Image (cartoon, rainbow, N blue to C red):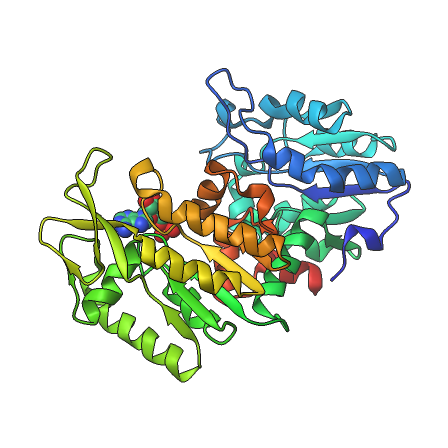
Length: 394
Ligand code: AMP
């Protein structure tokens, strides 16, 4: 795997695909600069080598050139975070852009306009990609969040470069996922929560070969419990996925994977923070009640498995963590993973809602790695190869 450490950028222009798809507030200011901070080490290494940098990204989902999605809004923030005044051009292809890129001096940074102002970006248009390629001598991909898309700037552009590599951020994502999926250390435990079985089924299918323990929580629990003949009251269920749930359990058994399902639930008489709640056996939930979090015995069971794991993958909350009343399971799982990590386990958290949960409850620095690319990470867990990664490795 080629990374920017394999190159000396002295007197070279790096064309870097970054993920600066950051949130803006009503004043059109960056309200969370995490993604810019995350790209900083890559940019700094290139500048310190004596190179210059052309940054390209998308922002939002513009229909044509919509000014509210202009990357102009983020110029000041990028300058502040990197500590270098960033230049900006009002397009991402064309003569003006090429001139600006050609005139860059070592140590300088140019940010080009939102790639998605051109439909050709998402279409993966070759001609558009070729025009982008004129802006740099070495292509660097540091955007994991879009690595599963065969867009012009994430994939197609790479074919016009002899010299191409991964930035630190993307390299770290790939290494972390590889560590989980091809671990020599054992036991490997995957915790899958969240709402539905249907969105996780391909992931489960692929990882069964790679793990020793599968912990299941969240809303998908109840499809498994009902399929096994349990009473789940009004809990979330995918009626048509019950067969599939039983198949997963059978497959797991054949492959020697131990499946840990909840044994008790925190149940509520409505989907609300103000609901009446009680703890009940997971397969004995009365009509009119629904399971919205895992119960105390379940947490103990899960924590025991986590404590003995060497590699831990966590995707999806164990309950409706957005409401305090049903957040306990997710918090205590986070604590168990943090403890295991402190004792030497490697833990990777990924997927939109688990990342939100980890941030909300302050576990971000207590796990080994928090993946930034929800969709891209899920596709890697599903065993797919990502076009953005392949394009560099080719
Ligand atoms: P996902 O995007 O599939 O990871 O699902 C995340 C969502 O699942 C979160 O918004 C949680 O509130 C929700 N969730 C977790 N547990 C339950 C549950 N027992 N019943 C309903 N929704 C749940």
